[in-house]
Length: 417
Image (cartoon, rainbow, N blue to C red; front, side, top):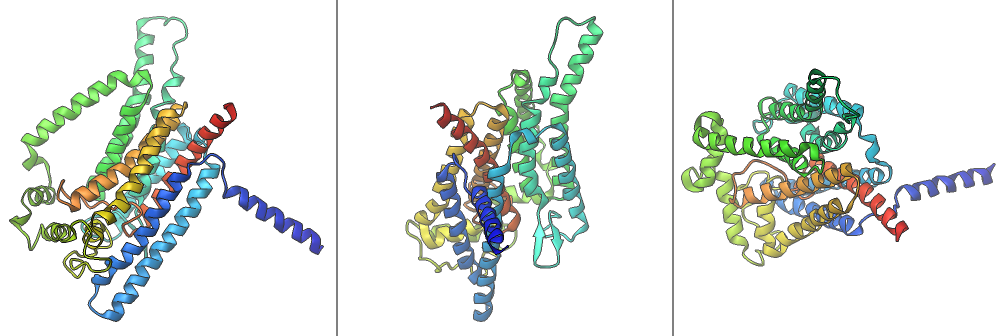
């Protein structure tokens, strides 16, 4: 009996080893993600030191924030490796897409029942220590949903022979338009409306919509070619209208962000307080920074500096070198994802990889652009660097999905070679 138990244990261990090892994955992506995650934990600890005045509370808060982020990273890494082993693009069909969408919309909507945080109802809170931001997970869900609608939904509308009459032909193409173009655009529109008007989370909504737009522009299916032109024209018209009627269309808090971006010194003690102090942090940093742990702006000048404004603290303490530890690994991930997106043969896989690449690109662009004053600040985390469970786990989930596709592609490539 003891021998049988030992054999069973060995089999379980062997299965676990198979689960957490996968031939064909891109190791440079894993290394880059690991560097970002570890660096993020370290910098969260450093940035947390200035959040309280008492030295005892300072150490306690720093350890707490680092420990919490470490748990998120470990949990995310386990999920990433598991998804990299089990995910298959064939799982994403019409039924799975709609179920995923409905669940995401419900979770985003019920956030309204919890108290707001910084003006946004974007979190489902479990007590005071744990919360989930459904919109972060919705970004990944929408990438998968768009990958189906933009590559496979039109395959069901194949013309076989001739139409009986013009009415049948018109009905056929109308149904095709409704299911292949109108439906996915409607899904994005509903998500955006909930993000802006229900959750009041403009930054997250902007990224989600742009990701969907990138997926739409990137689809290789010829059917969508004419609709891409229409979308570009629509965006141009909206840009002109928004420029002309911006003061009447945008909310007061959105206009204030634009005004403070254009002139940070307009209201340095109120609306542009964080931006001004972030710019001071960048001016202090220079090439080599003030040294690890030596930031001055984290001591009350940039509230909760371990979150969205952590990029400013990194630059102030470590200069260009510190910022390079964020930008270079992220660029490696983006470059690799775009490279494989161009190489893989399956259209659905292409869209998923392209969507994930845009997910990482938009976060680093909007976050660092916002804290450095290059673009208006919208409150977007720096993936794997900023403190936060939802964004951290979602980053790992996205990489797990990407690695599953990459591993399949590389195995097929090696086998044919």
